[in-house]
Amino acid sequence: MQTVIVGAGPTGLYSAIALARRGHRVTLIDRDPGPNGGQWHRRGVMQFHHPHGFRQQVVDALLAEMPEVWPALLAAGAQPATLPGQSAIPAGLHCRRLTFERVLRSAAQTEPGVKLHTGHVDEVCRARGRVTGVKVSKSRIDADLVIDAGGRAGRLNQALRGPAEGGDCGVAYVSRQYEMLPGAVPDGPVNAPFGVIETYPGYLVAVFIHDNRILSALIARASTDRELAALRTEAAFE
Image 1 (tube, rainbow, N blue to C red):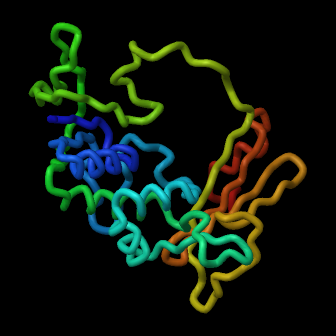
Image 2 (cartoon, rainbow, N blue to C red; image 1 turned 90 degrees about the vertical axis):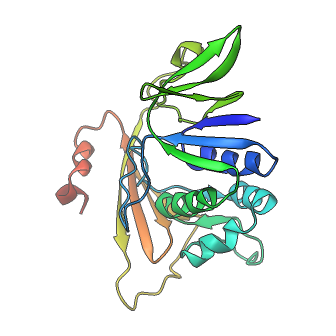
């Protein structure tokens, strides 16, 4: 079956590899052309450089479908997250999304049956009540199946979605990444699989352990707290 996946984030990349290994021909479309050397601003993904917690389910899914990606992540600097007294069982993964997505993208690029295409999907094409492909920058790519993996901010199928429920969750957060100093040991105190989380009067602080001696510090506040909104500036955060 000819399949088009819109969005080459972790879900799109994982789905593309899994479908290709089941005999499908997959075209993966994203407007971001991929990493440029050591830099990757990841167009259209505003949360790309925020800390991510990769839970045990992620590790299990990788080992079940594409086990070779796991040692590739470790070779790229990622570290298994473990719980006290359970060092043999990964409870997750210490890793930046940049590193995780870079490794998964490399796996998709070398997977037979997967083709990565750079472009913006304008619409899904239909005929007689069935999908027939997508339009990408005025050209067309035929498909028997289209998967929208563009994320919650994607607009491709906005007209097909039900009305949104809920509203402002009442919390806003900001984060910054830091590289550990030479000689600093990476085994500081932790109280969660991803690192450290502490609550203080009026705000919450979390420190995420990542790959390659990188840490993220995150501060969450009430969205109505205008004074702490200044944390968006580097000077206030420091």
